[in-house]
Length: 348
Image 1 (cartoon, one colour):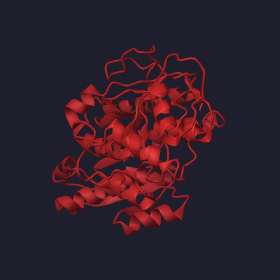
Image 2: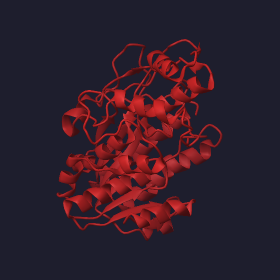
Image 3: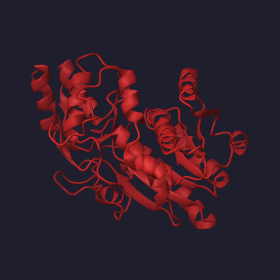
Image 4: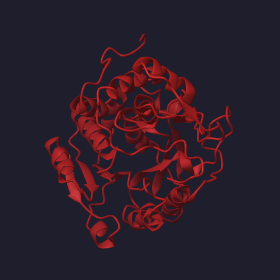
């Protein structure tokens, strides 16, 4: 793998190694941490990305010799997540963000990374999806009106693009497909309102498919190939971004917050062909690959602006494929949360 940093292993053996890599700050993260004069809060820190992002921020600040606190806020339905973060120097606060009284007690931290939201199972409980994705921002935004806020959003706010067509950019109009995507536009609009009415500095972080080996687009394809299941081709191409790089982008995007808010498409610059990826996994696993469905429009993003502002991802697609190809047949843990990237009808 020519051109790879010497610090990246060829394989990720277990979850401890995975978590270390996900939270390992880059030189750019450390340089950014030196500019921080206030604490950092991660809202919705109990989900897939929150713990890694909180740890990365803590490690970057430590490496920079900066004493600001990192606070992780969530319901922490799994107390072990909070305990592990505390052991790593992250201060944890248990809070239900749907409860205005609990939100009112949160410290008004100047730097906020807003990760709270719901996707999986959204078709079964649309009421809860609207509450988590729209009502929570309406509670949180006024409390942190003086903060700068990186708002985690999604590529689902965009319309689908034709096969082989260019990915969505920040200048493209939103066109959500399905109720989940509508709630994601709703989340953006609530923070946009805060920015326009109160001057809150925001960035809409439109993330396309982070991959951390326990979940992600490439993991979905690999697990189907390994299990001998057909790979759905309704979305013939996908984006993929190492979750560590996504965390790095999000942390440093605090410097890009503005009022009116700006959007940022965050994903890997290499678009992956589902057929090519599946066949590569089949070759490595010694499995015959079966396909279903006909390729049609899909969600794809163009991260040119993100790369120009924050740099290229440290982990390229080829290395990420290597890690997934070793993780899945070894029996590496899955979070059991498929991305449903092939669901072009907006139902998740």
